[in-house]
Image (cartoon, rainbow, N blue to C red; front, top):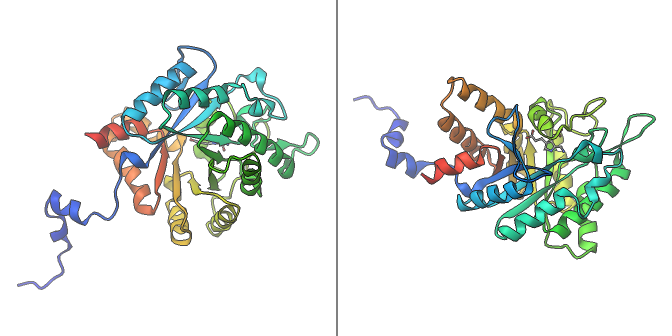
Length: 327
Ligand code: PBG
């Protein structure tokens, strides 16, 4: 008799495999990103993200009801702002009656249980297409002046009913600055999910198409991180934790599973992964060509985030994944 170790015994049937499974994926882990646009009765396809739409507020509310019925606990909202409302100071970002604020209120009115996460960064509202204010002479992204705008945005979003603010701008000191602004106005229950380790990435391409928010000049490398680095991600994570973040995010997701693991091993905070637009587009394109099994690839992809140590996943696959998981 061969006396060998037989790991295959733990894989012999589906029941055994379920017993020994080390990680789990459920609908409760999913956050669905959604795009809102002015208008009514609008479901505008996004070319580079087949199956994802820019929705008018009425359609958005319908979509949120469906996601809620599927058991998805949270949506993350992004605004497609009309070009004529964009300016260098991103003024529309703190308009209490702007499209974004209306959308937050309408969702919370229609489906109070659904958590609404909102985006804090200037790019959807900025005529420069940057996440921060741009010095008109030098082109430099102005950190400390940007913090004031981020705090104003945060307050109007909190007032509109946002449950979780998601600062995605990567300015230094923003988490503490926003936390103080919220607490001073009594919004001590509004959470912050910081985009702690957000890399300057080509994978955001389709998202920028969706919002027409690509930088007009230069790139985002003076604020988003260099993809060569992982210790720097820990530094960002520790700062955001110390400044009061409730949840830390890593973004993009799939090419950065090592960063997720690094954060998981070094902080006690919940970790979120953002499975971004380019990651969605890759799988979608291959599946549409018949080169990949869509359903199986989606579940395996999302599971990888859980195995790496994410507690939750922002993903454009959320609705499809929920349908598959509920089967
Ligand atoms: C910008 C922002 C981006 C994404 C979310 N917030 C793009 C960027 O930084 O240029 C990307 C999300 C995705 O690609 O799905 N604040």
